[in-house]
Image (tube, rainbow, N blue to C red; front, side, top):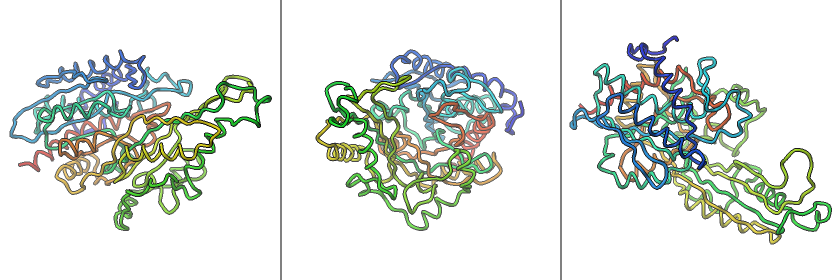
Length: 458
């Protein structure tokens, strides 16, 4: 294997590093499905053992009301700066399985990429930190104290992480949080994420008649819940791509022209973007660029919709129920619980009397923006510049990491979002992947972050 790094220890051990990651990826640690509970525990124990093996002071599995948290620390000198590393070992469901070229939990290497569920989000990225720590301890180059907190509920909203953080503030005390769960622009243009959107995730159930009906005998006389639900969903956005829920935009922070210019500064090739997705045109809120629509504007999207007969062949049924899962990505200063209430109130208001509606709030999280002039961001920039040969862009990302705003609120700590994924890695989709180049280069860059962050504290 050709190595992308200049670090001799990584070069010497790169095959083993990759093999260990493949073993972790074989564990189907899907947090949202109870049938994988045993695999959740197996993944947590795998990480605990690997952390113990690299030489931490101690590694433990901390129980919560939900899935457990793996915690470990290496304190070399209390006077030195401390970095709290956060990541997650849980993964999204792999459905639909039939769209995977190879089984999602049988990791395969093709064209320099590892294909498996969780390869990039977030097992591959969190495991870089385990191997970075191993490398620094082996080479005697560790310049900071390290604490690691790796959770098993990120993909379902980190419901119990807040309690753990609030109950363990002294244990988690640090100077900065380091997270690798984001992307770079591409391998020619590294970047550091400085903004994330929040999330409000809802489920809508529309009920019409008390049973499925014959569509010939009742069609045209009784409201079809699927038709009603589709009409309701279609009304949630206007022709300009704006969300029509009353009060939805009341607290959205509008950026200045200078700030919008900075959002659009990273290189962007729209034709390449469209070609990579096999679409003819981009879409979104009028008056904003693609970068702005993703990074600084809120959205509403249907994540799933079902009802009636979906099996093979035909069944002339007028269904009793229809369902949809709907997510809204939020921006400062939208509060996800307020958005939940606005959504519920609006859905109930627009539902016709021909049906009844039930709305369930699943999980959410706050948007977060971190300072771009901090010592930690400067250290991360220097690390990228040395490892990649160019200064990274500062970008805002469309995804959500609920813990970032919680760290700000409960620990008073900002996070450095130093991820190494690519948009083409297809996280949350079939055939998720993570480049071996990015995995190894990420380890090298993380090590350099510690080097430069320690210097800011001298």
